[in-house]
Image (cartoon, rainbow, N blue to C red; front, side, top):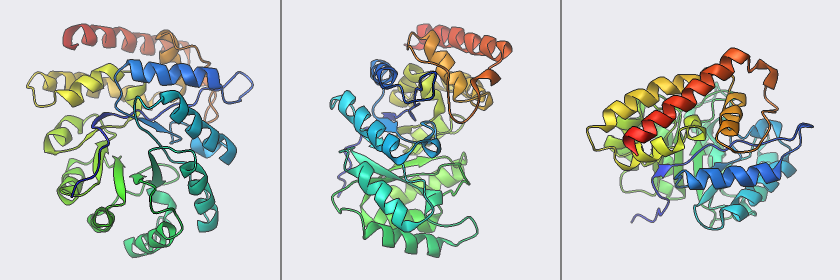
Length: 305
């Protein structure tokens, strides 16, 4: 019986604002939470790769998860990841600490459960061991994080996880509609919902039963993705999907620095400092391209919203 009450729609992979001296900027993070909610998100994914979780201490990861949950004030659910270690012992410590913040689900990183060359059997065995050490009442999910390597879930692993009914959220980064369709077929009638991170396959995946979008571009074109995920059955959404797919190519240009610059232009006061790359890489030309994206977004919002 279905028990998953997590809404479909847009779940942004949250950024972490930093001060000029590279500390987590909590006032800016609060402003960012408000921006997401004002722009129509259905939930918030804190402490993920876009949050620069591999460059955050455990103390920072836990504090950010708890802070976002507190500032959301129950208006939308908050999920968080944050296990970045290699050893099982350290991962259990990390996941228990994140769970203790009261977030609505704890998200497991698929590449943390086995090495790149190891089989699905090893992955499932390690997951069983991990589940045995986590509180049974904690809702769980998965994120096919591309770093340090991307482990896309197979038919076998999705089937095993869906049948446990302990998993509620799957952030899919396969960018492969055939893989997505197979996962959606397996997840039918279970608690596990799929949220696509890829714009090019998003509309088709929604029509096949995907619950929503959880990707980078929700940090910039949030309201348009909310529209697309809400009204995906309408024929006019195909034109919007095409435009969003072209816009999404900007993901490859100095992210997450460019997203922070974009949000500055949206009135969200924060620096462009990141720990993953220098904000000096955001050249004047890149800034002009982000300004063009801002204009295009405004025109699309006038047309579709």
